[in-house]
Length: 518
Length: 122
Image (cartoon, rainbow over all chains, first blue to last red; front, top):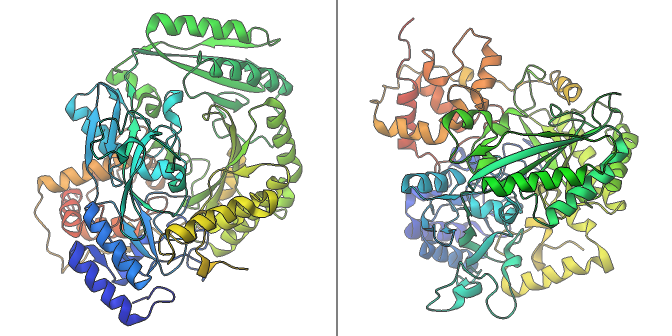
């Protein structure tokens, strides 16, 4: 049996025994075959010495059990690594940032504590997946939608805390931004509730997120200052209808006017759905920008979805079309109006996550396909944030075309993208996917190319909003303004709230004092 | 993108856990219960149900080219042991499922349900 770093075997045995008493022997995993289930299936270091591996796993089912597990870990200074549903594939899965950590698996905390239709919010535990909440709402016949990311098996809490996003209307797509209130277990086992939840008789925990005084929720996003055991989320009252339009322009440089107009319409909330920018035509869903557009076909296509009452959204779409008419040579195609709830037939035709329905269809994108009969298996995502302007898109595109070969050491790597994601309201993400499998040589090439992209992109002022575990240190180092002042602040807070450094050490580049290098 | 994906085709494919796990004569089949069906509906159907939008089904369709059914529940060549191995070892994009997601007892019920037609209809 593996033992956590800097922990003597007798102490580890004592801790395991206390954990078994706290959560039940069935929910403490030490057998190799059970611990192996916590490996990151998409690890870019699979079966190499640098792969991040757990020593054991503990799975509490209640807040009190989490407190007991954490107190024991703190007593024996055993590193824990908290996961929610453990499906954070491409960003580390259920494996820890520090090898030898004990995974604190919160999947069994799977209660939907409240869904309030009248005020449109939910309060859930970390093990609740988008599928679970959708089932709960459907069975209860409630008239609210959830905002799911592409894979519906993820945790609402885990996805929000990792910085994930979804595909419905703008107030809900930023999952951390649309949360309201948290319950957190600290390293000493104490429980904190944030916002209005800090009132003993709180009546507005999920109504007002800020409370009184400093707002600390941000410390728990991509952080390791505490373990979130409850979290509230705003839900979307089911909109009456959905309509979309598609704008197409035929010159590459027209992406400047396209995005300026889009920004105006989104910032005025005329367009409220998750827009999609395609390089070329609509079929080019994950299209590479490495080649020039074919003459006579659109250089860019932009899909504009709008949710709301039928009369209103028809007027909104007309207004949007008038605004885009200023772009010379633009073509506008009005899409079908769909009333909700969708008919079974309509459900089959649409991308269901745009209608609050969680699915797993995204795995078709990088799975076996006629064009790719033997895919690598996994992938990791490179997701730099770029300004929401056409000039930035053109600059990134130019940069990609000029440097891709050198970044990949002249080899064909199968890297997909960049795709310019417009689903954040005020920024864009130039997403690229790096295939990862079981072939060590190709994984090595991917790691090298990925690290080059991180470093070179930072030189241009582009940095990732989220990263796979093995690259979190590298990305954290790119946020280096004023001699890494931001990271130093996080380390100071970490040392204060978790002096023994037991909570998810290394997550997102924040290490406790005794594990910091240099 | 098409060009990128073609390049992947030259890579080594994973050996499938389903193929790797030989049916074991020592495993006596568990009874088919509603638990198995419920576990299947929650954990497997989003990828393996019939029709478009199901990545597992699409993948198996390409893998077998019609030689075997792409929909898991239509298979007659999957033993309970093979199903259990796929769940715990993972296959290609499908990461393994932990015991906090599918317990050993649930896995037994799931495997019995998916393998209920094993060796029938041949």
